[in-house]
Length: 65
Image (cartoon, rainbow, N blue to C red; front, side, top):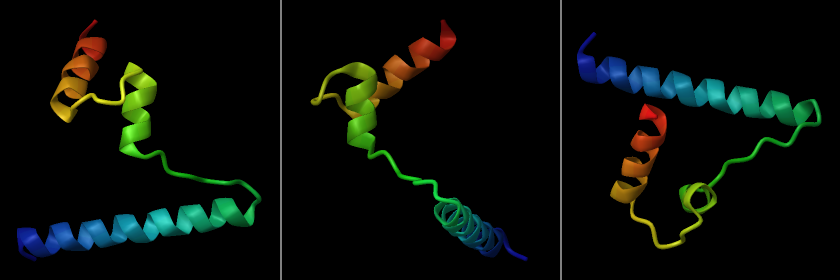
């Protein structure tokens, strides 16, 4: 199997598993949800205008300390 075909296959299996997990959580009465990147950036930094590169610098600094 070529690398490209394997990566495609792996992506599809991950998507399938994610859909299954979400459906199981909903079936059990839980409410899974996704956080948008913009909301996540604002929550972590408190700044709506932050750029992706700036966020990654802040994130790296937080992990390294």
